[in-house]
Image (cartoon, rainbow, N blue to C red; front, side, top):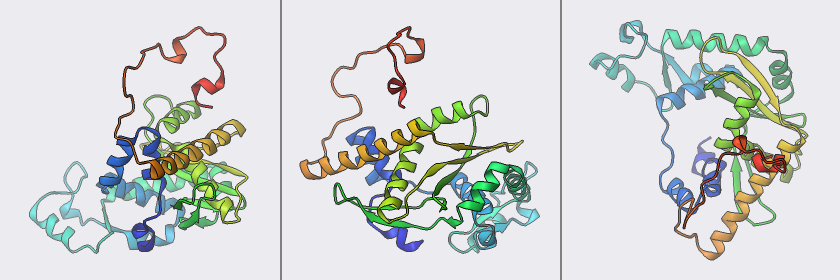
Length: 274
């Protein structure tokens, strides 16, 4: 994993910002995301689901005396001293969090679709490196799981309303999750490992830890591929011509009603991103 992190090849978490604006991309380059406790916890959830054999190396159970009455890690001197003894990359886990992770694993194992996908995509969190043929850009990716023509990512998700496919897809569009899958699929195809199916195992990030498996349909796959292609082409253009210094909306932008409020019979699926 060290080689992946130190590689200067382009990854999706930075590249996706180029679809927002030159300024967003330049900011992402200059300010790499630093791991937060919540991100470290999310990484452990991934390990429990995808690589349970490695969990013991990545997490350390917090002694009871360093856990507060509310179940969180104490900030007292003794707790800080204990934290300082942990090797780099090891995440502290309270007993409550360990129970949560056990419940998540049980929910995933009980879901027939998730069980089938995990049995198919047996290559877990293996870095991939490739050169984009159209632009010559050196790329890298870290898909959660691949194999048997299947590409999947595991997402823990806190819905703002119902735990539903439609609600997740709206978030996926906003967060660039489709482009991420398209980017990985492009790399796998370049490496001679073409993808026939792609999607997510989505896990509710709080009790009752509901699970759903979402496989992209033809239109969504096309969108994912176009978004990844657009990002790489834009990077190539700016690499050759110089990245402009502008935000997402230069000049004057017209304000219109959102598409769902319009009564335009000519509106098509393309208007909403698919």
